Length: 305
Image (cartoon, rainbow, N blue to C red; front, side, top):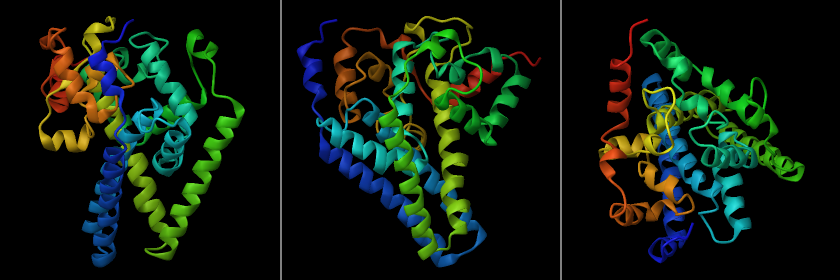
């Protein structure tokens, strides 16, 4: 497919945006810890967990661009930032995550898509099933599903089983990065708040806040009531308000139709890409007003049993 020159120009990576956004998100994490460290009570502990989880999730969205090598034109620098500064602190191996995510783009809306579990309907096609799925999402159940998916453990389709996995050297770098960064974070907690808060704040923020936010967003982005749906009618951009975008779809993640159209465009250029694509597509078919309103409407349309 020939890419228009107006779109190709948007592939330019603006490193200043990435540095600024990473610093702001890490500053949010630091501020939450400073507030808890000052007051040291249950309300500020809960706030610290929630706020830290939201900002870790925001960093995960930046890492999403790194999976597409859209953070820096030099792949080694791009991968260092993505692996060590963004994903390893979240206990996430970069190469497996990249392999999984690129599979999502190439196999999208097919059962071979490793992310099919996020937006398939069969396990949530009644209100009772939806309640069960939502309970899983909010109670760490999906953490194990995602881990098994990344590691290739458990049930898989023949297409998923046959897919090539990252090479051994990349996997070793992944796991070393996770170990090194988690030990560093543990050491920082041990020298400041106490090592137990590594468990209570950091890990709970990752698995109890970041993972549910990512799961709910992924469901809303591609779910439709029909069991089988083509690629085209599963791609949506959301006109979220600022609060929803900040928490659930930061760093222009709500421009999801545009991202799937040209996945190598950096997130800072997606609004400009939308202006180009609006001249080529009927956006009424690809626009949803809100993540939360879609989830509510999906649930209301389900039968009870």
